[in-house]
Image (cartoon, rainbow, N blue to C red; front, side, top):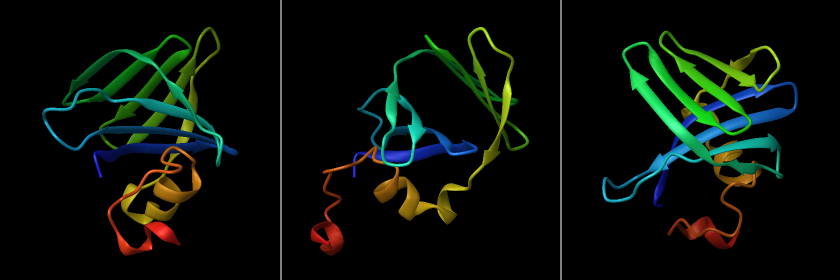
Length: 114
């Protein structure tokens, strides 16, 4: 697998997801937003990361992943929405099979054909 899950949040039935390259040679932290099975990729314009958290900025809004653990989506021009933080390690099935981000992607596992 060439991507690792980084952040996952939800507001009602809308999911917000960011993954990163598994290898240092690869670049980019794409973001995704949408309903389960119909996620759309957000083109990130800027990323700021420090001890207080990480801020992902796209054309349509800003996703803030804070320290301590918090997640906020600030769509332009509306006010910020606090998201439910979903731990990646408790949501592997959701991330890799149900959200639709990796549809058709092979992971090199025996269950790829299931």
